[in-house]
Image (cartoon, rainbow, N blue to C red; front, side, top):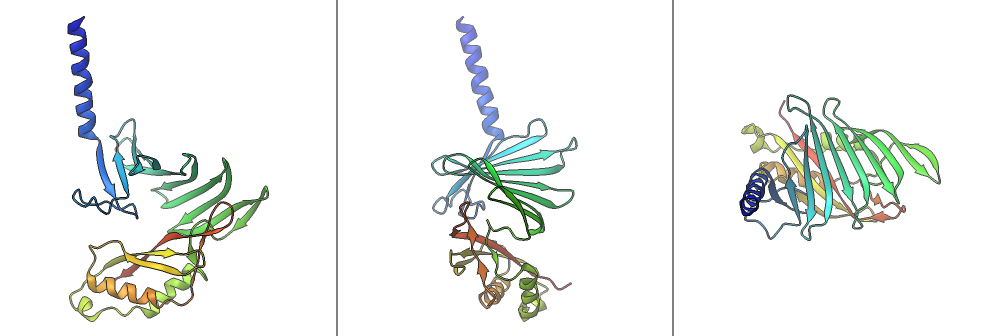
Length: 248
């Protein structure tokens, strides 16, 4: 009996060791971007990546109190190529309020929103732009071209792209050195549509390009619209805007 207990204990400890070896834990900042192991001061979330099993690999994103915030399920084909990524977003009461399904082959994303367990919105997106949208209002399906649950441009994304095209002044030093790249700007959009905070979240890009991206967005004068919560009230929410610099 003792030999059995020792053997069971050994198997349990060995399995735990293997699990620990394959499970990866990474701390994330407020934008859900990974931090270095030494940068715990800016950590707001933690991501636990579990090993691939039966064609699926899951990532749990929790706050620092170990409460589930997101659950990401990556699906792979027989050759271990990623074919689909499904992200579930959780409220404080552990109910799902948003599900995003991204298809690698079509490069399209289906985003669904839920309130009290019922579907309130479904949006098919291509390059983060709504191709087709559906809102459920008072039990009726209403077609829409914008996702009101996320912050956006007061006019249109196409108008914003045109603004960038005509207002970006490609820095001469960057041009001379053939420096290119995409600067991702995080904008904290307040309930009244104003920008409270603007941050560059990919520090690896040239500082010259970062400064020009911040300058041109600071001069954007067409405004933003705030996100709405499930009850239709404007709320504070982050919006992410890529500014591409290309010499091609």
